[in-house]
Image 1 (cartoon, helix red, strand yellow):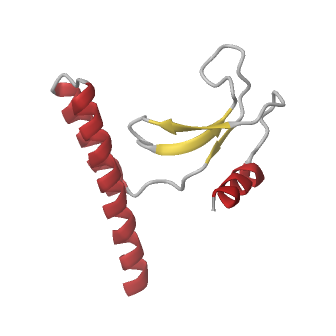
Image 2 (cartoon, rainbow, N blue to C red):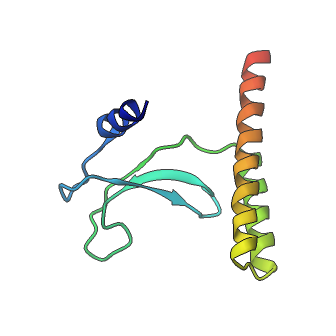
Length: 109
C-alpha cells in the first residue's frame, strides 16, 4: 500500500520552470480558502519562478462562506495553538460535509 502511494506521488510530480519538482501548497485567500495548488519549490521567495497550477477544483460557494467564517472566528478570538488545531479540525469536518453533500446531490440529480 505504501509503495502505491509513493508511486502515485512520483507519477503526479510536476517540474516547475526552475527545473525543480513543484510542491503542493494550500491557499488561504478569501476566494480560495483551503484550496491546494502546485507552485515552484521556492514559492514565496524572490528567486521563485511563476509556475502555478491548481490541484483542487474551485470550491463550492457555500464552502467559501463556511471556511472564511471559521477563519474570522479564530482570528477574532486571539487564536492560540489549541484554537488553531480546533479550527483545522472544523475545517476538515466542513470539507467532508461539503464533499458528501456534493456527491449526494450528483447522485440524486
